[in-house]
Image (cartoon, rainbow, N blue to C red):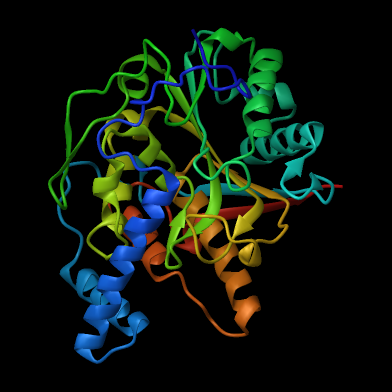
Length: 360
């Protein structure tokens, strides 16, 4: 049975989280513990927290990118390959607080896909990303519900348009986050991420069943220096997300790109949609109203690195506006740079064709 977009939770199994899965409060507590460790190390070195993190980042960069066993960007897609990213905004997408207008969300997606593909019609644009024979997995992000999740109206619009424009039956669209229905919920054989030797397993939905993946994430700072967007979204797809955590340069800035570079995710991902309707520019992963603002946008592309990098720059611009000086997301910058270095996608603006579509 497929899990339809917007459907209530039909899988209340208390063990669904699996090994290492934390709820939001546990994640926050874990990051608070790590933050205390970082600050203690900084004091011991006679540095500020930011200086300490920058020193770690510089050391990791000087060490260079390790050989990872998958193609470099040049080998995989040609040295001149570029990424196209569309940022579409609409002044009327928000109804009140976090609630959105569903028809406008659908119009924004239609416009984004036309701009992304250069197709003449919406139907042609949608047909670029799926066939009526596909089994499509839509991986959204619900961990910050109800006020810091990717809007379920995006999932609904994907299902509606895949039915209407592509002819893909709703029963062949599986909309999931961490709760995954049978027969898709089992975990795969292990993969080993090369930098840290981290052993992880993906849901068999992605390895064995789905022929295509749509990655629907939410744009938010993650414990200040890190970033939750397309690449981090797949921590909901593994058995041991707790083992990935920590924004030290050798942990999540490498673990997340290496996760997304695993063959099933890298080759099956058709589309990345980052919900930037009401982003969180500082703090995180829990909601913090003082750091929210109404951007009213979606970031859409096929390259998870490029859409993440564009989202990061949107957040950094807001951070600078908030305090009147540069406020970089140090760990997020390390992550997208490393992702580009292993050939996963483009992080450098010179490799990204950015299209801004202002609606309304």
